[in-house]
Image (tube, rainbow, N blue to C red; front, side, top):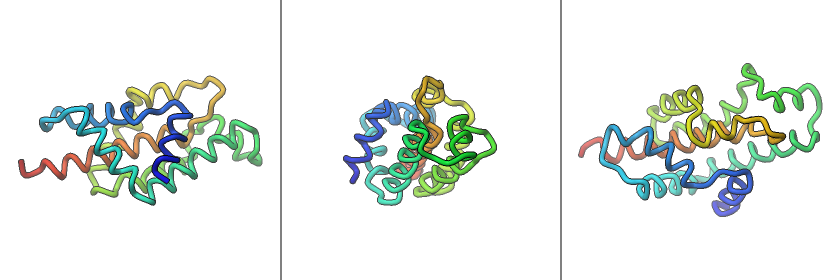
Length: 154
């Protein structure tokens, strides 16, 4: 299933290296790190079944919204990525705490700042990424937390 979700993300414009770049941005000022280690951590996060399920669910809802296959008012809410909707963040939060509470603060920062691939996903060009941008931030936050825990005693 990991390969399925990786392909789904790639089909929507998200490469593993894009997520790894977010991880590197979050953690490189705190520990010695290279991009390959970040890629490996992202890959480890994607091995978790609950992460895979969150990605499958979120991307499916984004696609259904693009195809106008959801009922109103949910369709309009997702197409606008309404700031008070919050369910997209809740789904992503199921990923952030896998490696501890540091993931939550990492996620909040990424969600607010919209750097790297997150900025690209927030551009409205006919695609709906209401869930995907938060899922990507959640994956990066979890991978960043994994690195922080693994290097805490170094």
